[in-house]
Image 1 (tube, rainbow, N blue to C red):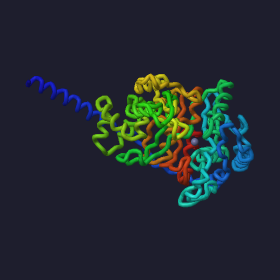
Image 2: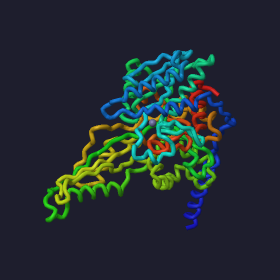
Image 3: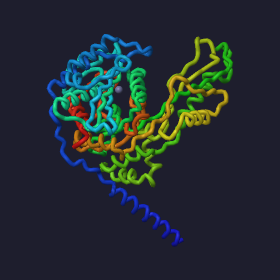
Image 4: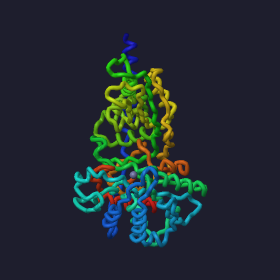
Length: 480
Ligand SMILES: [Zn+2]
């Protein structure tokens, strides 16, 4: 008995010592210098407002543009950024997508791509009255610039153009070639980005770094971390939709049978909502947890996150609680469409549902399919793939790569006391298709606690515009 006790005690002491060692060794990565932001270029705020005023609503599914508006936007760009227009050759892809090329001094190096899109989602007519500013007014008040597109994604585009215009006016020349790629349909079908990637592929082009929207700064993500957290997207989840169909003889609703197609399908959906695909911590998320936990003042949290080898199960349980963190640790599955019935007195023969899944890197569409069929476990439910769109999870960018480090440096020199942590993007972005052309795709723009995406009161903090311009200036310079 004594021997067993001594054994347990030794194991306990060993585990505790390792855990404590890892906890105290998980030190913040210092962000040394105090950040001094460059002043905003003259008229940058006015330019942002003007960009919003041109209501470049995304083309519809048939790829129909309101051409007059998109031409107007091009004219505005040419007029507002005359040095960019005069000095950087522009290639136009499929009418309204633009590639500007700024030749580097060393053309043996792979170029850098700065991406943004300037189409915006439409403003709901019924919601206009809920806005606190005109949706296409570009008004400046309360420290913000207001309107559709202020965040998504004209902030990036205007910041890139302001930074480039300013740098072009100096004697600066980039070492690596810089390409500015502006898309016109990210919010609808993303064909512009695909066409640009196709164009680059035809030229056998590869890139050192590709930066797109996606990751941002939050001061609200972890309440026990008193620093802003910059989440940098280093990969994207995959996407698949499955169609579930139940078939059961229908008929008159006055003589119902024991089960109907609706009952069968409801049961199947219920089972799917009761069970989730297994959770796991993939490498970028592990890095996110380690880096952010170095700054927490909650000792137990720091200890568990610094010792995932011991506390992984506990951490996974905790992360499963909130939808945002749950989406980072597993493939999610959720019903999005549920259809059946034609009349109130007819029992329908068919019931169908779509379930949409976002696939964690390391898993496939087949894994989702297998999980769904096994969980439903009912031969009366037919499961098929929804044919319109599906994609595997993307590869992930290495956080030790020069591409990631360049972005990291630019953020450190733009945001005070920032914690930089990699994440995976749970939704899809235009930059996904660039992953065939580069190992260094990252998603980040320095927007802080941004709210109003696709909704009412979309607005950009003026200080975020200032940060954006500084961030892109430093990315282009690649120093500091
Ligand atoms: Zn966007």
